[in-house]
Structures are given as structure tokens and as C-alpha cells.
Image 1 (cartoon, rainbow, N blue to C red):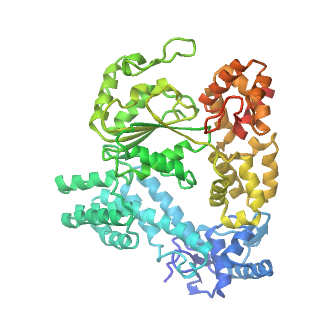
Image 2: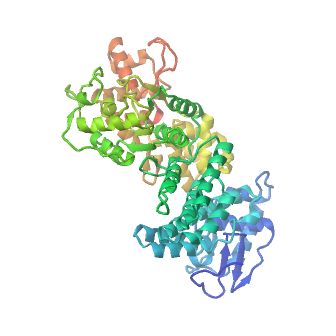
Image 3: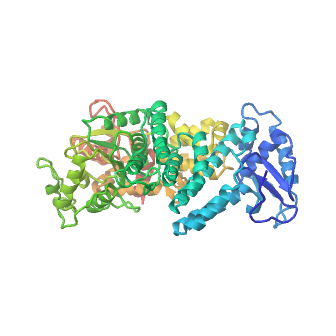
Amino acid sequence: MIRPPARPAPAGTVYFSLLGPLTAVRDGRPLPLGPRKQRLVLATLLARPNTPVPVDVLTDAVWPEDPPRTARKNLQVYVSAARALLGSPGDDGRDRVVHGCGGYRLTIDEGELDTLRFRSLARAGRAAHERGDLRKAARLLREALDLWEGPPLDDLRDSTGVAEEAERLEARCLTVYEDWAETEIELGRAAVAVDGLRDLVERHPLRERLRVAWMNSLHQSGRQAEALAVYDDYRQLLARELGLEPSPAMAALYRAMLGRGRTARPSAAGRDTAHGTALPAAPRDFTGRREELRELLALLGSPDERVVVVSGPAGSGKSALALRAAHLLDDGFPDGRFHVQVRREDGSARTPAEVLGELGRLCGMRVPATSAVPVESTVAADAAVPAGPEGGAVTAAVSQEAADAWQRWLSLHRALIVLDDVPDEAFVRGLLPRSGPSSVVLTARGQLAGLAPVHRIALGALADGEALELLGKLIGAGRLRTDPAAALRIVRACGALPLAVGVGGMRLAVLRHLPLAEYADRLGDPSAALDELVAGDVSVRLRMASGWQDLSADDRRALGRLAGPAQEGGFTLDGAMEALGCGERAAIRTVESLIDAGAVTSPAGEVTAHAALYEVPRLLCLYAREREEG
């Protein structure tokens, strides 16, 4: 049965439902939706309401394997049927389904489609929760869930394209259910959520947030033994299926239930800031880096490795790799996994005191607030102290008392700390563990050569296949197949850097009308490439600018002069001497300084300076040339 829209639509209006089998009613009477292929087209248009749907997406939904020569003509017939079903034109007098350069666009209102109403109610419920109005939040979220009739588009999931849309809808429904259940628990009404949570856990046994909510609803209802059994069952399931343990956040809740009667409350799944987890969400489009990920996991799983540096040029995916590993290592760090961004949004570095203060809050450690001291007093006695920009010793605004408190905490706990986008060695020396079982992952553009002993993992460009896989995740495999040669040109023009490929993919996902070959031509133009790599507020040029500012004035001048020969396929030492107008020794020092800063890459194996071919990432080359010419 389809529930009527929460806001009644005018008489004669068709009301569609995707949150269950695809159905439609007009004035309370169900409507026939035609043969299966016609329903697939309608479902695909409704799944992307008020948005152009490319013809190739519709084609893939209806004929995933081998579309007939008449596919486009057949689609026109199915779209005409959808127009007839929708009836009268919209308020602007135009057809409700129109064809433009981006594909077919179906215009529909919230009162005509259950997924739009669902989204509106869920958004309003979350806003009420953020304001602290829990009762209103619970009511609105429940109204959203009442629109859910079962697995979305369950009758059409044999089509891969429709199945993908259905899975996205189901994921949203599950998230709203979790929001609602947690709100009811906060209101002290846990019993109303118990049965529904049990049913969903049976269907989604590995979804931890559902388990946490079910476990807590049982506990708050006075069913402690059942709540503890939920944890034990989940722990055994994870061990059997994946070889993993429940997250520290769930384990902490379990321990709290053992000792605190009915007072335990769930932390937000995946984020418990007291001996738990404080990580951003795992990167959804993480692609490739299999060997590097395997190496990082092995290093962090070893008791002998306490510090790992992940380095690479701007946009090479350092943060994504570190976070991917951190999310996979929940069983190895029982005292928590914590991520701290070392830089502000404008790219400037925070102070060490700010970073240590945040670490203290995350770890539940009180950080003493006393006067700042030189960095020499916060590091081991034999550690070299780097010079500052004017030749003086670098100081860190971290007190000796705070540094000692932090080292005591590290020595007593097994935690994983990710310090993201570190500017230099001096910044982190006082934050690294001197003893104990904790581990730290540092991500940095430069090599941080002054740190020892550490293990280093250097990231470069993705392999062609990995870069294409990433692009396909963003624009769809069907579109990628329309012009694989152009897709390869796109990723190579992006230097195969994950950031640039990702931004290009996001741009193409919006510009559905843009042929891949045309976009490849744009990126191939050195004067236009950086202008094309912008998607909303994400700009590759801004990321390059941040890395540029990290370089010394001498390195910036040198990189500007080397950008020309570097763009022609790399440069040799002789080429560097010619571009820089200096002798061999000076050229070697300059090139090695740029390697240390992460602006130049060198061969992985041993080779003489004269035989080596040095490279600069293409987009950094383009930015350096802009600065040199400007």
C-alpha cells in the first residue's frame, strides 16, 4: 500500500513511490506503469528528480549488456509514456519531461514523490536535533520513515543501474532510522525502537551503528543480558567473516554496560573521543595504493615501528591513505585512533600548542597550560634542532609540563595518532612518542628528512588503471566506456594525481553533456588546465598555491626555471644546470632541496646524479610556470 503524500497534492496529480516497489497513484487509484523497460526508464528518471539524466545512463539501466541499434528511439517511446503519465505541463507551461544537452530532466515536486518528501523530513528532523528539540526531531524522522515501504525499487533490482540507485536510497533510509533510534534513546523511549532495530540488524548484520543502537535500546529497556549478547554475537561475526574486532567505541559502550546499570549511552558510531575513535569518515572513493596500504598496515601492526611518514606532492592522496589505514586498524589500537589536521583551512600551520591541546581533548588527557619553551626542551637530547627562516632556533609553543604529560600518556596507551599535513620536522618532534606502544602517522608534502628513526612511504602518481578506476567511480562506468581513449587522456592530463582526477570527475559528473574528448582537449591546453580543475569550492590551483607557499624563496625561483624542461618529460642534471645557469654542485644541491620539499621526484633505485631523470608533477609545473610568467 502507498501512503498518500504528507502534503496533499492537487486533484489529478500523480504520486510516485520509490521506497518500495515502483508504484504510482492518482486520486487514490493505482496506475499501470507499462512494461518492464518502460518502468526502468521511469525509475531512473525518478531516482534523479529535477536533474538531467544522460541518455547513456538510461541506456545502461535498460540494456546493461548490449543495447540494440534502436535504443535511442525506444527510449523516446518510453519517455513519451512517462510524459503521458505525468499529465499536464508544469506551472511554467513546459512539459514535465524535457530533453536538453545534459539528457532527460523530469520536473517533480515534493508532494508528488516520496523520496523528495523523505529527504525534506529527514533534513528538518536533523535540524531540530541540532537545536536540541529532541521530541520534534523524533517526530519528523519517524514521519520520514513512515514513507518507507520496504527495500527501494525491489522489483527492478535486476538492472545494475537501478540497483545502484536503490542501494543509495536504502543507505539513506538506514541512516535516518539510526538517527531516529538514537534520538528516541536520548529521550528515554528506547523500547519503541527495539523491535525495528532487531529486524534491520538481521538484514544488515555488519552495520555497526545499527548494532550499537540495538544494543543500547535493549540495555535502556532493562534487557542487559540481551544487550551484552548483541555485542558478543557481533564480535564473533566480525572475527569469523572479516578477522576484525568491534570498534573501540562499541567496546567502550560494552564495558560501560557491564559496570553502570542503565546509565550507558551510545557514542556516535565511529567517534568516541574518550579512549575511542576520532577519525573523519573513511574516503568513499579511495582507489588504488594497494601496495602502499599493505605496507602501511604492516608497519603499524609491528611493535617496532612507532612513526611512519607518508609523503608526496599536493593532491597525491596522502591523507586518504592514512585515514584508510586508520579505519582498518581498529582492532590494533584499543586506546583509540585520533586524527588532527595540522593546518588551518587557509593552509597556514597551527601552533604545536593548539595541536597538542586538541590531542589532549580527544584522548581525555588534561594538557597543562603554562608558558612556552624552546623546542629543544621537548625533544630527545641528541635530536638536532633545525634553524628557523632567519637562522635562529625554531621554538614551539608547547610547555615542558604539557610535553611531559603527553609523553606519559603515550607511554601508557596503545593509540594511533594521525597528524595530517605536517609543515616541517620541528613542528612534530615534541609530539612523537619516545617510548611506549603508541604509533604516529605523519602526512607531509616534504620528506621530513630530519626525523629519525622513522619509516617512509612516498606516494607518486596513480597507475593509469587506478586513475581510470577513480574517474569511473565519479562519472559512472558506462560513461567511461563511451570514450576510453579520451578518459585516459583526462587522467594523464591530471598527472594521475587523485586530487586532480577527483576534481575532474566531480566536474564531469555535473557537466553531463560535456563529451570526454572535449574535456580532455581542455585539460591538454597548458594555459587552461588549472582553470578546468575546479569543482564548487574545490580547486586544484589553490592546493598547488598552498604547496608553493611552503617552499623557500630560492626553491620557488628554481622550480619556476625548471618547470619548462620538466614539462617536456622530465629533466636531467645537465638540463637543470642549463635552466638554473649554475654549475654541477649548485644544481645538485638545488634539485635535492626540491626533492626534500616534495616538489621534485627522483628514481626509486640507485643511479648516478647525471644519469637520473627528475620529474615534477604536471600540474605543479603549470602552476610554477604561471608564477614565473606572472
